[in-house]
Structures are given as structure tokens and as C-alpha cells.
Length: 449
Image (tube, rainbow, N blue to C red):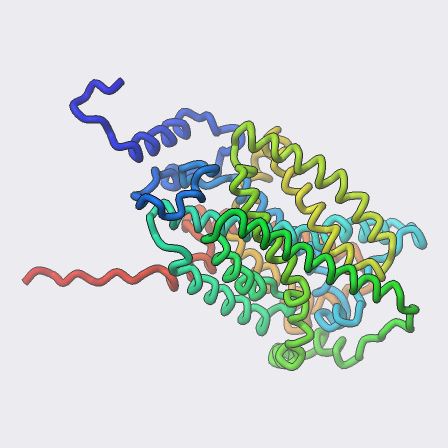
């Protein structure tokens, strides 16, 4: 009951209520080190009827969801668990096209090195990439909700944001890493952004249509792979091996540009999967799967049970099936296990299995996800190629232990670097660049005469 002369506005009540919860320490156990008071605000003015259906199932605050930061951090470091083998292998980016990155068969040769490499790669290949894609869809839905709270039209300025991401991805592809994901995400985001302004029924039809088209394509490719007799393994061109071991940086750039069509085939082939996972991320966000509520915890428990229960045996079957089932495993079974990872990581945070320094480290990487994704590839390029330390050529006989050690070292550098950076700045370096480039310019006020 209000005893004052006037009753505060509803937005102010909501803002003060959320801030009081944070100050009271109700989120200390899981959210310690993540939720910042400056991130908590009440909703801005919203015109009636402007994207109102978006806000119904979502919390009406703009507080950061710490689980999303931790998941993004895990996804970024998890993609490195796959990409590090590309940097460390002879021929690097070219070897992927020739199928030279197949994991060892621990059943044929059950040595400690083969078992360790097979398990390491099994846990990562395709799973964290799918997780990162789902989270990109979640981020798109959050931006949509933010625009709705401000009463803005959608997609508004978002196409410029997607175009800037495409430019960033193109620079990353040309200068650093041929298997960049940012370009594909930018194109997919343009389509999904338009779908967010449509009805839930339209989005549901688009989600299942994209998934069905993708699974049909995967089935056709897998059937063709299993129906053809195995030919002799392709050998790497010695010139390609020398390019990364001793070649110059301009020569590597020229190779990527000359083979751009082949090196950019993955986002084209998996476009249906990208649309499906983006929209799935939107759907999970709408259901509150990332919130610190009882319903959110129940959803994460179900994701853990179904994702791991179905994903682990399916991925194990495709892994044991050999190279003929690679496409089926990476582009069909892996996304299912990625949903289990979402539930497992969320449950681990809920039950404090991940706490303290580990949670803060993953959260810092997640808050600077774009910078860390590009940064990890730059570090691996400088560590493995001849333009830097040349470890791929010098330590080839220590495979696979030094590769897994490189992943651990780069991950520690990113975690420590992002934590220190975010203690001083609100955004990662590339995030700050994107924000500065896309923020509307405010006219300068003329000083009074």
C-alpha cells in the first residue's frame, strides 16, 4: 500500500524490485560475479501493439543471464577443441578438403594417445558449433525483445549489424582462418530476423521445414558416401604442406582467395541447419530455458536427459561407423548432443558443480565471445604456422598430446585475458568496435553564444 501522495510508475517499481533482489543477495550463489547493477533496468516505454507477443513468456528485465555467458564461453572454447586439429595438422586448411583430419580408431589401435584423441574429438566435433549457433539465435531474440521494449520497429537497424558481422567474418576468413562461421551466421541472421517479426505459426513452419530439408540433404550425401566403394586415400600436395610450415602470410591469404568457393562450402551445405538452430534458440529463449526459475531448471533437466540420452549413443554409432558416417554425425547427431550440453552446463550451474573461478572464466569468455573466437584462431595461427612459432612442423612427432596442450594453453590465455579486459571495459575489443561503428551518432550541441 502506497502512503505517499503519488504512486510510482510501474516501470520504476519493476526496476527497483529487481535491484532490491540483487542487493539482497538472492542470486549470490549462482550469479555471483556476473549480474551487474548497471545491467538491471526496467522496461522502456513501449507503444501498444508493437511486437507485444514477443514479451509474454520472457522476463521483463534486461538483466544479463549468467547462464548464457557461461554457455557462450563453453561454446567458444569448445569450437577450438575442433579447430585446433586443423591448425596443427600438415596442410592445415587444405587437409580438411582432402579428408585428412579423421580421428584415429581406438578399437584398431587402443593406445593411450589414440584413445585420448578419439575421446577429445568425439566430445567436441560439431557439438559446440551447434551450441554456438543456438546461442546466436538466442542473442538475436534478446535483441528483438530489447527493440520491443524501446517501442522500435523491427528489424530496424539490425541489417546493418548483420552486414558488419559479415564484413568481420570476411576479414577473418581472408586473413586468419578459412573455416570461419561468422559469414554464415550473418546471412542466416538476416533471414531469421525477418521471421521474428512474423507469427509464432510462421516461425514454427520455417523451423521444421528448414530441419526437414537439411536432414534430407544429409541423408542423400550419407547414402552416396556409403554406396560408393572406398578408393585410395588422397594424399596432401607437398606444396600445401610447405605453404603452412614455411610459406608467407600473403601466400596463405592468396590460397584462401583462390579456393574460396571450396573453403566456403560448409555454411552453404548446412544453411538449413543454421536456420533450424537459430529458430530453436529463439524458441528456447521464449520458454525461459536460460532463466533462474523453477521452470527454467525443469527445462534444463529435460534437455540434459533427452540430449544426452539420445545424443550420446547416436554420436557414438556414427563415430564408430567410420568416415562414411562423418556427415551424418557432424550435421545431424551432433546438434542433438549440443542440446544435452545446454542442459548439462545449466544443471551444473544450478547445483553449483561449476563455481568460483571456473564459472567466472567461462563467463568472461562468453561476454567477449566474438573477440575470443577470433583471438583463439589468431593465437593458433601464430603458434602453429611457419609465420609464427611453427609448432605444427616442429612438434609433429608429439601428436596428439601437444595439440591438446595447445588447446588448454590458448583457453587459459583467453580466460585470463578476457577477465582482465572486462575489469576495465564493458565490452570485448571487437564488441566495442562493433558497438562504436553501429551506434547512432548524436548531433553535437552548439555552445551558447
